[in-house]
Length: 177
Image 1 (cartoon, rainbow, N blue to C red):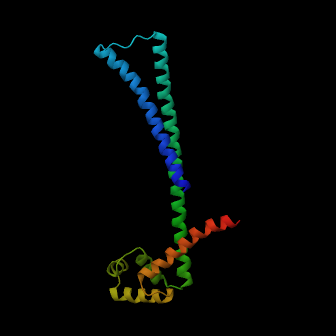
Image 2: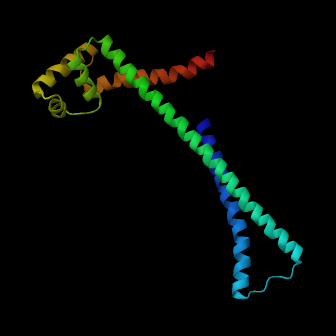
Image 3: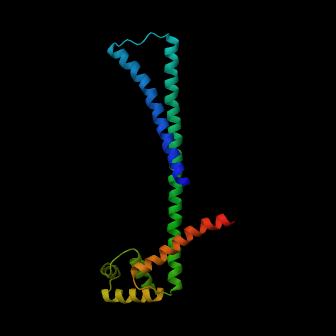
């Protein structure tokens, strides 16, 4: 939920910055169009007119500064998300290796299991490994037997469950501590 609140705050901030810049730009455009078209501006003292222009210019500058800050925050959030994704990818790789060792898979079975987890067909795996489909089928049967599952969907679900358990266990551990 915290992510949603931060996203809404960032969106609101961006809308405010853009609105400020639009209003300030409209002041300058209005003055230019009035000069070009010969339109008559309401009679106001020149000091007030200059103050309005100064405020509009300050608003544009503030919009640039605020926009740059929002952009920097957005870049930081994207970098954090990328780092978390990289960590999750690394954690998944470690989990796969841990399970393969636990199941005592041979190097060939490890390759086949990894290709199967990636969603490749038996024919694709056989082609990549330069073996027959029968060999790949025998290896996948051995993998499923060692993992205690009956097929590819169950094999994949083992890894998903482990990842979800790790994700849900961390917040629970923090709440208890």
